[in-house]
Image 1 (spheres, helix red, strand yellow):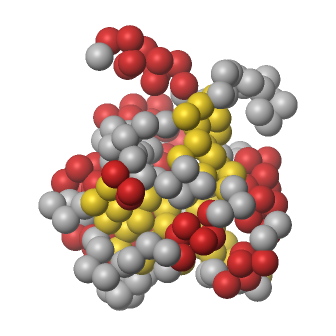
Image 2: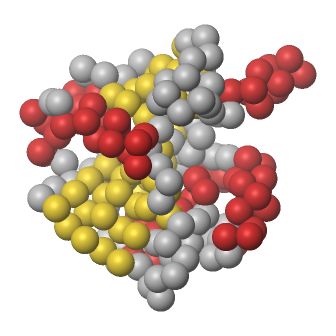
Length: 220
């Protein structure tokens, strides 16, 4: 299983924070890591660079949460036997993260979500399931900077789309909650965020759109 990190041209601080947390454990070098960075609109096509166990993919589109999945679809479609753990750059890992993901049985797995309600598209995808959702993923591909707000709204509407429509999708450790902190300026950028914790994968998600979550909780 490879680890894929979905990022953006302006996400350097968050990405560095996540990578530092990953590199602090010896198991880091056991994994191939693919970092997909959106927002390089002037590129004619994908630009790929490698640095030890990291592959950097610079994208000429910014497809919000789906940037990395679209890159996997377009660049790795022949790797039908591969699985990926899909993360956002606004994450951090705990001491048992690598042990947790190593213990996941991937036999006959097409996709795994980390939360019963909202997984933020974070979880495990097989290349085959990504390929199966080609039409949907390409419909989310945004190659125009001026359309980012439109695709952001579409991304919210289509959160966990593949998980919801994969008939074989499973929930990791049947986890149906999330533990989170009070709002803090986590990255010292002036943006208040909550930190959600997922013990089933020992993962922290540093979340900026937490007000949307609170609004949803109050309405449901």
